[in-house]
Image (cartoon, rainbow, N blue to C red):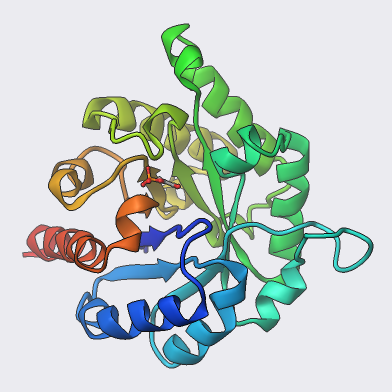
Length: 259
Ligand code: PEP
């Protein structure tokens, strides 16, 4: 069964104390969203204490990045094994800021996806085109290339542990959200690509999230668009009421769909 997911990406925001207070303040509300999988991805320093707060709940915990090596002389890096030990089940890989600010290549991201699966983490694999690529009509080609690369190391028995996040770079942190049609076009293509590689039944069970300026004011429309199975949220996930409201919107949509 495909899970609808609302995942936060706090980026480099909130110290340990701020993270504790934030999670304690919204915990009850998040736990009321019974049909939606909520995943929190705080900075590394806050992972363990958030794990202590949510460990007996269905709320997931994820790192925002990892290296593919287990240990070694990689100053500033963190391994999948370390994320697991801190209580993570998920890891965001290939986020546009990693690709375009820190210069991570498709190959590097592919190797991290492989390692995440090997250690037992669920990768949230981010893909998405830059503005100039969209303007040049290359959106689907870029997204396909990024997916093909990351999925080249994912076997049929592993793909159901992966989440894909389509995040157009021009929509991340800009306040410019993709239209439901723009998002769906990419999501439909990703689903087709998954179906061609793993079969339709498996493709239908994979969560494909949209990310890029999602807010409570646009979430209800986006969640109804074809092949959008939830959100990866940056800015709005740092605001208690906003994040809770988005999770409620997805949960309300799922309840409506079932009734
Ligand atoms: C993100 O960082 O993954 C993201 C989608 O950010 P924002 O929601 O702020 O656009």
